Length: 175
Image (cartoon, rainbow, N blue to C red; front, side, top):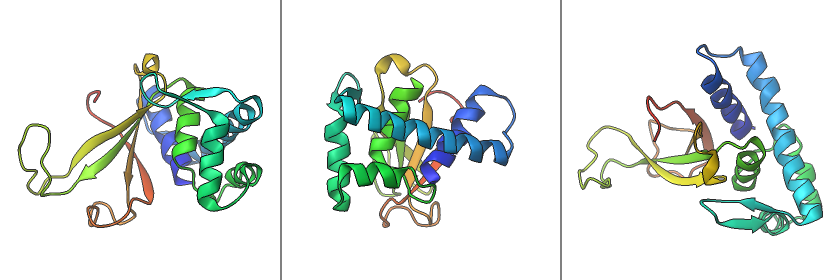
């Protein structure tokens, strides 16, 4: 899935000065998927909690149940499907990865040209990215993983389409 590929690329990139080989990224993405689903499954069985943002936490079983309900399937079926390489991960998997890797995952979204940014300036033709969430414990914010939530047509079309895609982001300085 794209989430795991992009997280693997971002995670590897932050630890080395060169881009990793694509084979290594794909292999590590598979490891991240297993780690995320194991975190969700073990937490579901033991009813442990995961840190969402700041100090806000959620029971893992509640998180998995909500995700499964969105797909109209049982929690067990959801976890089983998430183990498949062709299934895309989303919010629950981001939360699980942030907690299990002990690295904050910063989710970004593009701001359309006519939206205002915090400074009150209008964006013009540049593409600006806005932080929409910081998943994981605040104590893990030293070396975050940045992921852009957008659509497959980014950057050509991004403000009118529903987000259905993740991309790794490599900021020049921490956000």
